Image (tube, rainbow, N blue to C red):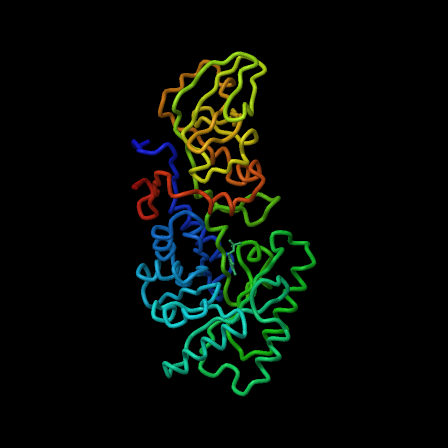
Length: 378
Ligand SMILES: *Cc1c(COP(=O)(O)O)cnc(C)c1O
């Protein structure tokens, strides 16, 4: 473990990320494009490292949410790569989005009109994806919008649409009736537009089966090790390990309080360790009194997080470790091989997505290299 100048260490396994990409790509087969959702700084893991690793694994199509996110990764990718901006262009940013080499997902008649106006100005047909609302009521053209659009003369003039897409609301619940309803609505609306490649599935949708793959899938979460099949074994390799350094330990007697608000009171003689990660690192305050840490050398012992999470530290009851020596600087896992992301997220009352994207910029980040399996560099 290299010396770190922070209390928290976030290790990101780019080799596992690349394996996850290849697993998903092989699952959909060569006729289907496997894109990658890298919005929110690649779900908090660092787009600057994640995007090139995905590119080396063969990915050529990327999805971000904002123009700024797309502009940040554009220099990392060659002209053979497409970057779609899911939220589309905010009014007035169309020319900037185009100049940055990005392709908007057009979500509304207004966005279509603005993109066509830019095409008119530039005198060229501009690439775009069209989003259809198949039932999630969040993005895309409704059936009425499609009617309005198609009632126009040359409704798509100036556009070179390369993709028609929609998004599933309940794909992580395979038996949910909304899945088939959305699938049917997507096919119906799509058939009214000129023929073009289509995409419906993200991570969980991809696991609903080949009917859901169309021409492109857009996984994000599964790439980063989040289980796309909740309630079933996780087919993905874990990508993230979060460790917190030990600052000190103390022995306390029954009746002694720990942390802000005296949120925990020992009911027996206890050994308490203070670890150098807190909510200021994006480790959720809601996990106080509910989560666990693990000493990697004793992976079977779940050490309860006790009391409230502070900004810069948290307390763990390490009594179960007996007299195991615990030197200052020892790294304990908050997320790791014996304590999956989902368990930590559940303890915080949230999901892996939110926990990952919330992990702040404060950690020391180690990237385990995808090009040399043993390699590790910061
Ligand atoms: C975030 C997002 C994805 C990726 O979703 P995951 O569940 O992380 O795989 C795909 N498509 C759209 C439209 C999204 O917003």
